Length: 390
Image 1: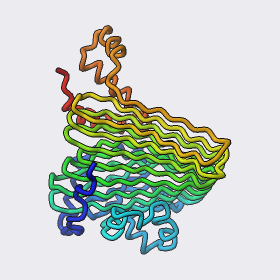
Image 2: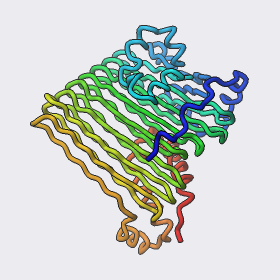
Image 3: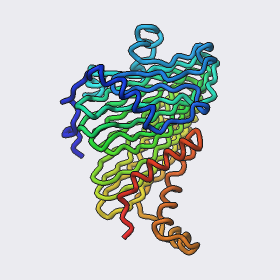
Image 4: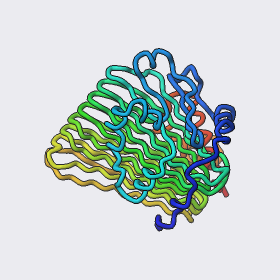
C-alpha cells in the first residue's frame, strides 16, 4: 500500500472563530449522544473549540479534571508535563512530528488516586470538513493509583471537503488503576485518518480497549500498549468494516515488559465491494518478562470477490517460562450456519446479516448502555448498505 501518497501535510491548521458556535449546536442537536443520566460527564471538541457540556458535581469535588488540553497545560502544567508524550514519542516518525507541530486541539482527563468514576465520560470529536481544515487532536487520559474510569469516544465529520485527521490518544494507568476505553470511529469518506492509541501501565494496572473502526475514508489505526508494570494487563478488542474503495490498515501491538503481564488481542473485520483491510496483530514478550501471556485472534469475513484482506499474526518471544498463542483467518460466510438460519425461515440477506452481527458482537456488547449499542448497530447498518445480495 502506498501510504506516502495519502494526503497529510497540505492542510489549513486554524479555522475562523465564527464557526465555533454552530458546530457546538450541531453536535448537541444532530449527533447521537448518550443519555445524560447514564454519564458522569460529557465534553466535546468541535472543529477547534472545546465545549464542556457537564460534569457531575461529586467528580469535581473529588478532583477529577475534564477539560481542553491547552487549558490544562496552563492550569496544571506539572501534571500534564509529567505524562504528555510519555506513551507516544513526539519524534517517532513523520506523522508524529507533523501531529506534534500542528496539533490544533485536544482533551485532558485526570482521575485522582482511589477515585472510581462509575459512569462513563463521553467525549465527542466533531471534524469540520465544510472547509479545508486539518483535524490534529490529542487526547491524554491519566488514571492515578487505584482509580477507575470508563471513557466513551465518538468521532464524526460534518461536511465533505477532503481533509486529513491525526488523532493521537495516550492512556496512562498508574499502580492498580483501571481504564476502559471505548471508541466509535465514524469519520467521513473524504477524510484520510492516521489514528494512534497508545497505553502505558504501571504494576497491577489494566487498560481495556474496545474500538469500532467504522471510518468511511482511508485509515491507518495503531493501538499499542506497553505493559511496563508487573501484573498489569490489557485487552484490545477491535472490529472494523471496510467498504467501497476504502483502504484500512489496523495494527494492534502489546509489549509485555513486566513479569506476569497478560495481553489479549481480538480483531474481527468485514470487507465489502473493492475495499482493502489488513489486520496486523503483534505480541512481543521481552527478555525477563517471566510469566507473561500474549494471545491474539484476527479474522476477516469476506463479502466480495473484488475485495482484499490480510491477517498477519506476529509473535516475538524473548523469554522462557511464558505462554503465547495466535489464530488468524480470512474466509467467507459459513455456509452451514447460513443454511441453518435459512432453514428456520429467515431470508438469505436476513441470515447473512445476523451472522455479520454475531461476528462483530464482542465489541458491540462492550458498549456501556443499550442506547450506545443501538447507535453502534446503526453505524454498522450504514456501512453494510453496499452489500450485494444478488
